Length: 462
Ligand code: PLP
Image 1: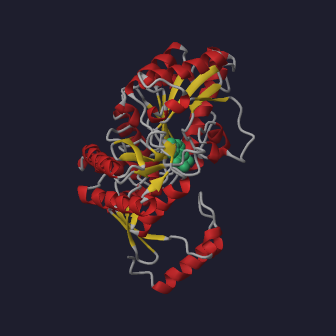
Image 2: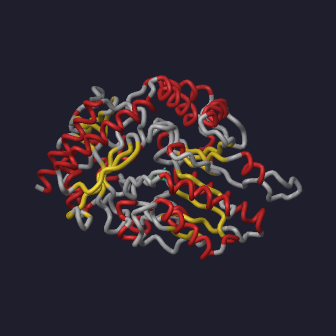
Image 3: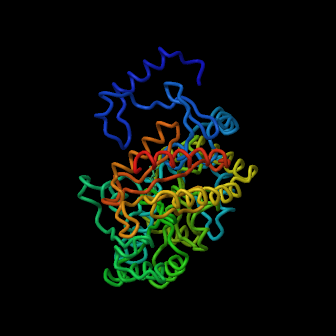
């Protein structure tokens, strides 16, 4: 714990928090009777709150972010060294860490060549939508402007991102939405029956549904398809391989830009640099944020092909021919400086290899839990990005009630183990426990997390 802060200081912090902070994504009524959790310090996989209580973090900062773990002094130093040289200049100019990180990133992303910096996953996705829309105007007289998104996927919190959001509880009460976003069905094989889908060749079936939507809307109206490689908050959904082969084929057939949202999967989470690389798919646009600098600085990127880039410089006489977009803090140097060091750590410590090995280990441990607890309907995931879907009845696959799923999360928290669960996202299906420990996780850490879940499931479900 931070020795510089006395208990009195911390009690003042809690009072100030209760008086003035509007926390993200939670209801505040409970704070009338209990204190918020203020995270004071972190090291490796562990964090300490204002009461000095230690927690092992099974979700990398709550939202799949701190991939290299807490307390990385080398990242802090890289940021410091950069900030005392130059902290910021608008992104119409270049920066040393910006150029160097882009070069390193592109080396990990064959087929892509251009990096556009901004600050958040939502913002990066907005940029991608704008590019697709502008290409529609430049190339197709504005007709090919529709953007397809998938049921249960999430792409961010702005109105256009919510318009592209497949998690209805997140969007509820924020309409009207941006026009031109069209939903395609999800690709969760475990829920095939709910969709009236065949279980054989499910991936191809799910991709064919995308083609059906394109044909219904008119291929000349559809410019982009936006997908998470592994759906995160919608239930840790890993589409089968057959899905991706067909998706790629369909995009090429109808001249539709494939936009992969790597905000969660990006930079190692699944055991490859990017989630799409698990499936051999070749995207036109990739957005990323959380793991880019593991939360040591705010940075997000949109990465695209030379072909897309070239579309924005194809007519020098046209005053509108460039991407007329800016992100003020896309010019901050702290982000790319942190990102360079983050990448170096992942490479030098073989964290991709560790992620794959530990992911398999944890999937095995969760499989053992499934044998023991009938409430676990399915465990799934890739690398250290795992989920356990809870059901009241294995035969009918009726989702376990959200309150009980949340009770498991709360029980783990009481044991000093932070896990997550899909919540307030997909109506009726907020029933998946989520695990995304830092890529540095060791077997002991994962055992501690799984043991806590074991105890919690027994206490909550019997
Ligand atoms: N895309 C995905 C897949 C996400 O999970 C999130 C956030 O959780 C976002 C986009 C939005 O990112 P941000 O919160 O940085 O705007």
